Structures are given as C-alpha cells and as structure tokens.
Length: 151
Length: 301
Image (cartoon, rainbow over all chains, first blue to last red; front, side, top):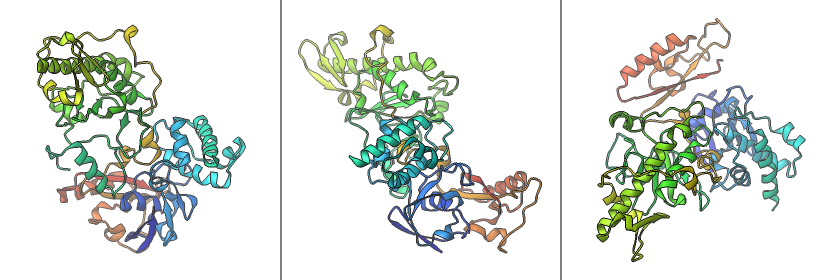
C-alpha cells in the first residue's frame, strides 16, 4: 500500500511497488492529463511535480514517492489560469497538444527558479520535446509567463 | 454509458466529470467571452444525437447555444475551428455561443453516411468540407427564418437573421434562435438556399483563436490513450528489453498475482506479442462485460 497526495487529495494505492508513478496517476487515480511519451524519461510528456520538483513520472516507481505530494497538470491551478497556462493560450502554443501538459509543468517549475529567463536559460533547462515543433511559440510563451508572474 | 438515449448533453458532461474523479472537464476552461468552445470529451452523447438537433450537424438549445458537429479530426491544424466558422458565416449565429464536438462515426454509419467523408489528410479538411458546411449553415438559417415567418404569419423573405436572432423587418419583432429551433427542426425547405460567394463573407477569414487550445493547456483534452470505458482493465506487457530475449518472472510473484489484475491471463509475462495477444483474447472471452483491453508496452525489467 502506497499513499500519495495528488492535487491535494490523498490516495491509498494497492498496486505493485514498481509501478511507474505515471501509470498510477493515469490508470488508478484517473488523472489522464499527464501523458505517456517515451517511457524512459527522455521526452518529458509525463512531467509532474513531486514535492514541488519537476520529475518525469514514467520512470519514478510508485514506492519511491510514498507520502509525497504530487501536482499534475489538472492541479496546477484551480481554474486553468496559472500564468503559464494563460501565456500558452495567448501565444496559441499547442498544436496536437499531446506533449503540452508536460511542457507546462516543466515550465511552471523552471520559472520558479528562473523568474527572468534568457533564451539560453530556456534552451538549457526546458528539454521536453515536441513532435509538432512548437518550440518558437513556447519560447515566446515562457517569456510572456515570466512577465505575467512579475506583474 | 450504455447508450441511454434520454440522457441530456449536460447530464452527460456532469456524469462524465464525476466518473473521472470530479475533474473539472467539459466547459470548465473558462474560455474568453468572445470565443467558441470545444469540450474536452469528443462526444457529448453516446449515440451522437441531441434532443435539440436541427439536423445531423447542428443542434440549437433553448438558451441559443449552438452545437456544431465537426466531421474531420483536429490534430492541431485548426480545422475544428475553421469548419464551425464556415457554418457560423451562413447560420448568422453568435460565435461565442458555438460549441463544437466531433461528429459520431457510428451515427454516420447508422444514418446513411450522413457525415460523408470523415477523413483528414493532405490539407483537405477545409477544402473538401467548405461548401458542405456553408450549405449546412445556410439551410439551418432558412429553416429558422421559415419557423419565425410561420409564427408571425409573414413571408420568410420579409425576415432577416443575424446574431442568433430572426427579425421581421417591417415590424421589428424578433425571435431568438433558441425559441425557434424546435419548430425549425420540423421544417423541410422546398429548395436549398444559395450559399455565399467569397466576396460576401463577413466572418470567414477573420483570425480567431483556435477552440481546441484551452483544453490542451489544463489536461482535460481527451486523446485516444485517455479513453476509458466501463469495466475497462489495464494490462501491461513486460517484454524482455533485449532483442530476441525471453522474459522471466521477477520478484517471485506468479503472473496471475501481479499488479492486482483480475485475471492473470491478462498479464503476459513472456516476451512476444503473439503470445500476449492470444492470452488477452482469452481473457476477453471470459469477461463478457469487459469491452476493451488497453495493452501498453512497458519497459521490461
């Protein structure tokens, strides 16, 4: 039995201890906003916050996060109005949208440490990949979100 | 969700939201005031129908909201916004009251391929659907006008439609679309109205925010991998990570006891998709109520 808090709600999960957090969230808790991409922590589609830190949940065994507080895209803001989400809409960032939950979660954590990011900061820290190639719009949206967070 | 034909769209959205663990899905995104919306769920009803259907493409509810069914697939190319804009051009409805959902392939099959070609490829969605969508919008508009004319006892040509309202020009009397939709649904036009030519467009061509974007920023957008059906179970195939290798049970737990599966046959511990699929087929036969098995390939241990 593993206990996690997902978006403020506590869940006791009776699952195999090596089950990746991603599948615990999607299949057991029912939070499907977090996506499966590569399964080997390379693409970032599955990014969630574990105790505030961005992590790639496909490669985090559930047993290793017993007692942790998890934030997924569904819980990033109560109304979908987190500055990053607002910036994403304003810049029309998503194309197919599949990777965007992970992108937004990665950026939300990144901006906490980099409130005024340079393009080089973005290149070095946001390593999630997007098959549609929305990188230029994401870059604009990251700068816009940084501005919104300071305003 | 057993195809209960009496369930309303809103009931369904509420039910689906509850079933998904109380997530705020559907229209909870809070779209900007001027924008049309798309729900997170592909369909609002199991059978693709709505009690307020004007036809297979359009439903107008008493509150004037317009449901437009989208016959192509939105993959970020924007046609889920473009095609309803084309309908709106002719229907003369309020864009902020337009809600878009996917047309049901099942309904198309049941109703003599009413949606026609539902494919999406080669930048063809707008090119191949534009004329049809204009006709759908124009036809609905003329039926609403005819319904208003009948109520007032005046000729349809003495009425105009704009911004989701039909007006009798001479007297200034008005009906909202939502008040007319029930009557309009029963009207068959003697002949289809002509559609606008490009020089007459007032809405097509305006840059508008894509309606599929907000659900893609809050995790509510539903992709194929997110499909969950009643009694669905999840199976994971633990394949050997080495090409040509054969998996072996790890951790000492027999296959049937792994992962809380309801049937050990579902969980193939051996490498090899053929073997796995035959086992899952066996499981499916044993669970009559279980409609779908989603197999996912997880990294082997």
